[in-house]
Length: 407
Image (cartoon, rainbow, N blue to C red; front, side):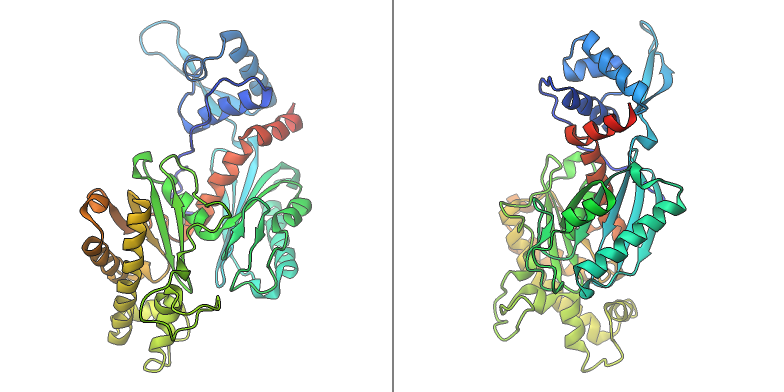
């Protein structure tokens, strides 16, 4: 991954804590997020007694989870020594799995990306063959880096379908036959002996996109327009909004008027995904453009200005814009970002959606709204996976296992 900049971590809960792991998690998250990186700053942020703070920091320094950095002098009092998170406090892996393209990244707890690969993974084979292959790819990549698998603290996986994040299982994913209720998180956890976080791929894209921007850019709604249409919402406090059962953001199956004769792969009719996704546009233009066989072909034709494709994409953008205008009233996001190969191939989709949203949504909901392209592009999913895995590693549960393995 080129020009990688560590993403913004969420602030830890700084309410009074007594459990050892919770206190140490607080300290590590404050240091990692840049909120407090000296002993004095940590005292102010946590309200801990100086002796308590020093005891925990000394233990973290001895364990190798925290390192001493440069000394700062502000002109008053004794110089303060900066504290930093150790790069190898833990190793995390992010896997962004797609129907056509998947990506894999290895990073440390400072979010330094050690390796990143585009991989081939056939999800249509079913869960066991696909996860066998994923385990092999992760093991090989760690081996190339000289990293023992025992150093792996967390794996974050994004799947292209509805996911119950609590159980780590897909729930009736339309484009993943045989995966329904398969315990992906449990199986991968047993294979790799680490924590496994399983989520919808667009949720992780939304998280990556939100954390790459200033905190006041939220709430952020991320839309991926590809073979299907998916959405992810990150709240103003930096957390993914999943809803009560993990189904929030599945906007591809919102019904649009006048499309009752269009059957969606979910079994319903008139879904916006069946009418206006890149896959739907590809199917609609193929009678006139039989040489177009893939989304990549469609994107190239759009870049070349092929009239049939341009018309189809602009019509799709207007349809999607109607759904987005409804979402603007429902969620009132501060930022909407668009991802997917088609949106990155020009401004036709962005301009079409933006035009409808500003025409249809009320001024109060749009006066501060920013509607723009993704900053991270194809790396958004692995970026969100990295930050999710790092935050889990630095959580009370995660830091307990790390401390136990290093002290």
